Length: 469
Image (cartoon, rainbow, N blue to C red; front, side, top):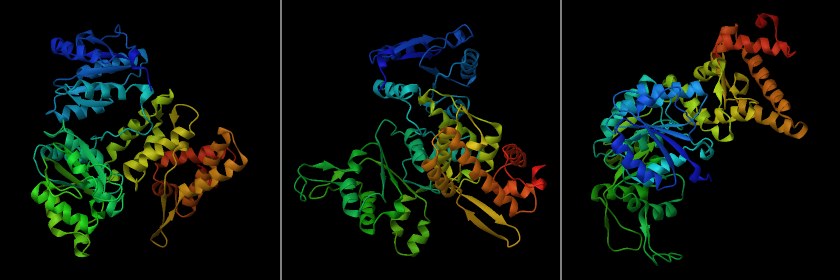
């Protein structure tokens, strides 16, 4: 845990009077704050702080100035942007402009604000914990605009999307943009526990209601009072619990196990699924009346392959979360090309995994194509008009195991990755007529494939002359 007595924060704000009031409260939390006006942003301003907080009004011009000052001094200070809660678009622009996260200007809860500040201190950033949703692609921006409108209405929301698309993150966006933002956000995975335990967690119990119930315990519905409860994988909920959930939605009351009285609820329910619930209804495993109760408004999250402009911002966000080890990672242009070209069957979760593997494999701070290992790769056979799944990750895992038994250095690990990449590329080349087709099924550009082939030849690997040009 970092020693927060030595934390230094640079606060940029044009409203100095109100900023001073808030800063005085923050300083009581053992955080040192230096307040400056945006007009003071210049190359002479020392950016030697652990964190920067900047308040934005109409645009991100002040943020751009701050980033320019950082660049001139080689500083990598994380930035928190404060924007009006009603101006979502400005918040998204700030994220695109280099802010690590965005918080509402209206947030005056000192504990919550200092908690967000402490979370972004570089020594405290948890690996792989970047959870912000990126809205760079037009498809994502359209989803954001719809989400803003839904957040302001007191309706149940059903999120639909493939595994790993970020349904829980979007549920948090709905919560933060709603009038319940100051209340709790409670998440529960309906497939994570057997029915008996799930019932106890959701509804709670009274003392003595069953063996081992030594005290009364409120369930998650009660814990979400005045806030939002997120029910993930709702399609996996057992039928008996579906009946009880329907009653809660109808009556807005919950009864603990072993209790004769009920508790009034003031909560919002957001559910999510990666299944076709209408098919589940036809199969008799999901209640139709519950479906219509949950889907007062339905939001569909497109897979990552359908919002390609989100890929690089997400990847860079995941790389920033690795700053805790003292390195500032970046992506080469070839690596970016390959990331954008890949079809991402595992969506954002798979992208996070790929980036984390790349950080492990690189010996410096630049991520190149040789460091990117994907979970799977489809190789198309034009002759038979079919496709064959090559589990590249399993092949790599086998070679890593072999390497672990006979090799130990980082150079040996690099050779293992190189050999695996060579075999995957050669399989693609043999199953296609030309280099362009091979590059397409590999999910990379022809230029990237050409560079890879040249590098393989220089390393002494057998590459046919027809493909070595």
